[in-house]
Image (tube, rainbow over all chains, first blue to last red; front, side):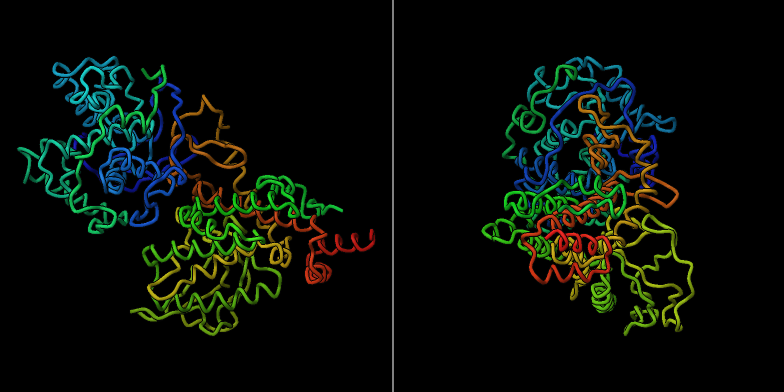
Length: 271
Length: 337
C-alpha cells in the first residue's frame, strides 16, 4: 500500500504549540491545505467495543483500541485488531493525520503515489481528485498511498467503490482510513499467499513483495521490522487467544457492509 | 450552611465545577457522579471494560461511593495483572514497603496527596539490590516541575546507600503521574509492578481514597490547592495557545481546548501533548491530573454540604482538622445550630 521504505522512529514534531509523537515515517501531523471539514461520527469508545480491550495490546493507545477492535469485528477477520495496531505503530505512530509526502525530503513518497496513480489509472475507475492523489504521498493511521486509498473496494464493487469522488485528505479521517485498511487486509488475505503475520506487513508495503519480491532483501527487511515493531509495541504475536496463527478473511461481509459499519454515510463534501 | 471553597482560593469553585456539582444526599446524583469519575479514570488508564464488569457486580450496593471505589481498585488490580511487569521483584518489594510507610505517615498528617520523606530514615533506605549493587527505588523528583518549584533544602541527614541526595517525593493524589518533573506519556506509577508484587495498587488506593468522603475530609485541602495552583500556572499558558473546539469546524487530528480539558478531534489524545519550560506534558496526563484535582474538590464540597449525613466521627474529624477552612466551617455550623 505504501512504498515499503521505513525509517527510524522516534522524533517528536511540533504543530502549532502542540506536539504529537511521531516518526519520520509519519513525518507530519497537520492537515494539508484544502482539507474538507468532513464531520463523521467520533471515534468509537470502550462502550462500543465487543472484543477485549485489555489483553495483549501493549502500548497501543487506549483511545484507539475501540476503533481497532471495531475493524476486527466489522471485517470479521479474527485477530486483525492487533495486527492493525502493529501496522499503525509503524506507519503513523498512531497519529491519525500522519502525512508522508508533504515535506521536502519526502520526494520518494510523492514519487510512489505518482507512480501508483500513473500505473493504475487506466485499469481503475477515474478518481475525481486523481491528480491531487498522485501528488499526495501516503498518510493516515495506516499509511495508505493516496491513489490506492481512493480506489479502495474497486476490485469488489467496481465503479461503486465509495471513495472515487473523495479528496485524498479524507485519509486523515480515522474511520475512513480504517475502512480502507480493512479492505486492503481482506485483499491481501484472499488473493496472496500469506504464510504468517509478517507477510501481511510485507504486502502492506507492496503486494509485489508477496510475489516476485518474496525472499528479496526488502521482503526480509520489512518482515524483520514488523517483528521488531510487535516487540516494541508490546504485542505478543504468539498469543493465540487474541491472534490466531493465521488470519482469514473467509467471513468478509463485503465492502458496502464494512463501509456502513465503520464510516456510515460519507458526507456530501467528501463525495 | 455551604462550605465556601473560595477559602482555598478564588479558582477552586470553578475547578470543582469541572467535575460537576452533586448532592451526596441524593442517591441518583451520587451514583452518577461516582460512576462518571471512575469511568474517567478507567478510560484514561485503560481498564474501562473491567470497571464496567465490577460496577455491574456491585450495582445493588447502597453506599455507592464506597462500592465504586472497591470496584475501581479491583478493576485496576485485575488490569495491572495483565500488563507487562515494569520493575524487578526486588524493586517492587522495596517500593511496596516504602509506600506503606509513606502512606501511613501522610494519612497521619492529613497530607496524602503529596508525600515526602528523607529516604535515609526509611527501613529500606528506598534502595533495592540489582545486578550492579544498590539502586534508588524511585525517581529523585526534585527538579522544578509541574507540581512544584523543586527542592533546594539540605541533603538527607544520613548518607544514602544508593545515592539519594534529596528527599523522596511522590504525588500520590495524581497517581500514576507521581513525579512533578517527569510526566511521561504513560504514568510512571503504572510501572510499579513485578511478577510477585504490585505496589502500584497500594498507590492507586490513595487515588480512590480521595474520592471517599471520609478520607477526603482527612486531607488538608490547602496542600491540594497549592499543588493545583502550581500546575495551573505552568499549564495555562500552554493550553491558552490551543484553539477552542467547535463542532463542525474543528481540524482533524488537532489538539483543542474543550470544556476545560484537552481534546483531539478524530485522533488519539494518547499521542498528543504540549511542550513547556517544565518539560513535556502529555495530553492524557493533563486531563487526568486536572480531573483528579476537580474530583477532589467536588467531593469535598459535596461532603461538607451533606451535613445531615455526617457521622459523629466525621464531625470530630472536621473539628480537629488541620485544615482551617474545614474548622471554620464546622464552627459556623455549630454556632448556627
